Image 1 (cartoon, rainbow, N blue to C red):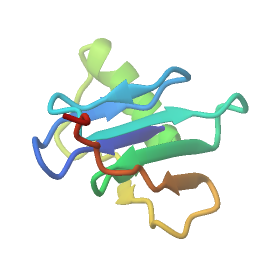
Image 2: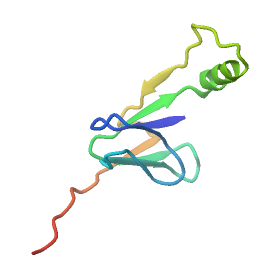
Image 3: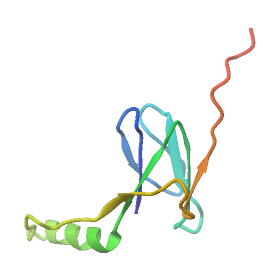
Image 4: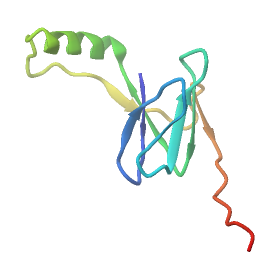
Length: 98
């Protein structure tokens, strides 16, 4: 699973097939149709990866009332050079002509 973190407003959003934006609208992202690769853009978007093999069992244990302290979920910052995330250069907003 990939999450989008905005370094400006600290909002975290799950990437989806449709474009999602942070609260301050400075970063955005979406999954591509294959559901694995993603595109992100805006002002310095940070993409986090969560290990689904850790997350799913931990959530099931929690929902089943069997949550134990020490259940961990591996997470990492996905590097800008990753072949699974395309960082698009988003042009700065232009001011309207007077």
